[in-house]
Length: 169
Image (cartoon, rainbow, N blue to C red; front, side, top):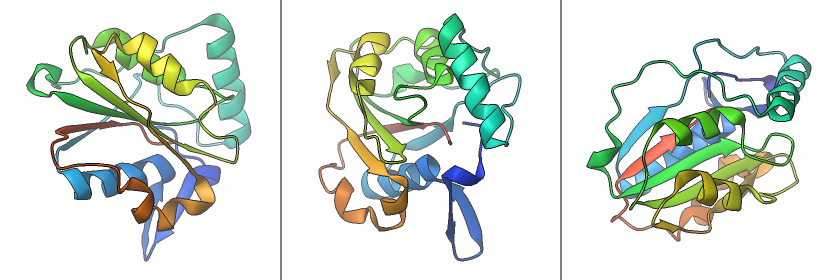
């Protein structure tokens, strides 16, 4: 996602990544596929406290933020990974905007999330319901402090997966 706060950054040498972005890159290295960044028309703030407040407001109003135009053709993929940071114990509204805009009917959807100690909560069920996928598999939840060493965590993946959709925390 286009909101990157200090709470969700990992450094790998001189490079800085969002935690979800970092895991998405690990998955892409393991299974191949393409990365797609979900971005809102109005960028989110980088200030963690402000971002938290915006997120709670969006969730309370069930507001789905408008996404930037994209040339993504999801019909070309059988399997779609949906990556997101946990926000207020659920999926960010930006991800729900994406799932509302793209038809994943008949696809296999695999969620993955990064979090700060609270796990995936009911986010996998949220993704399954919002995606209308044929199959929604249980995903993985990786705590932010474990992101840099998560290679073993993604061993359940296979090279038959074709696509990764990610948002950056």
